[in-house]
Length: 331
Ligand code: SF4
View (cartoon, rainbow, N blue to C red):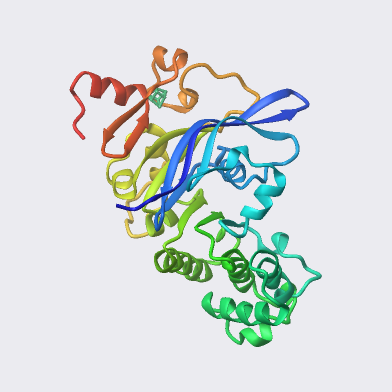
């Protein structure tokens, strides 16, 4: 049995804004095992990036973890201070972002940025760190690494910059990698290469990966487990096969129906009507009820509980809860 690497329990993340305090993540729990890829999916603004920034301790100044626990192996990282978190980042957990140009420093060479974590965390000398940096560039498939290590980010293509980001993230062999939409800014061919690379690294290094995306096609390619978020809440979670073969939450079903199917000439795209509510809006009951075709009075008044419909497949929806409760659930 795989060991649990990351455990998040009842996470609540809030922000101070001019309109008062808003909750961007509401009572979210999940776990990731070593060698497992969890994909967090949902529309922009659903709380998936804030969840990952909460884990990394990288919330902006007006944000804070208001409740819950985050454990990395046995360490309660929600209790660590800035300095303790800084030591952990890069060493035990790393993050790659959507746009490498904003994450890489444009005035420093690739080599400088690769050497930094190696010299800081592993205490390597400059020449040892350069040697290791070249190995890392090779590992992520960068040709002529001896030449590339002396170049600046603007001298590399978008795909190569993303590979450099991955090399930096992997420098100290972290157990956990968080990837926040790392392929969104790349063209389709490069996207496929980067997805394959992350998948291979996860398998070969037994890393736990949290992969954030809004693209269900990407999820189908790489996920072991999927967590669907809507307006700051987890609405469904389960093994990837269950989520695609037997989605239960109306929002998950809507997300899957809005993925274009180029192989089926009769396929009709069915976008989810309406838009995500604002974080400042007070919503009673199920947070999806304004967009849900099956919403009842109960949905508008009471938050649905989380129901386990099969092993590890959890859904927060009154329809599903009532089917299970009444013994009508067909699986
Ligand atoms: Fe729709 Fe009600 Fe289920 Fe929410 S609880 S998703 S409103 S049926």
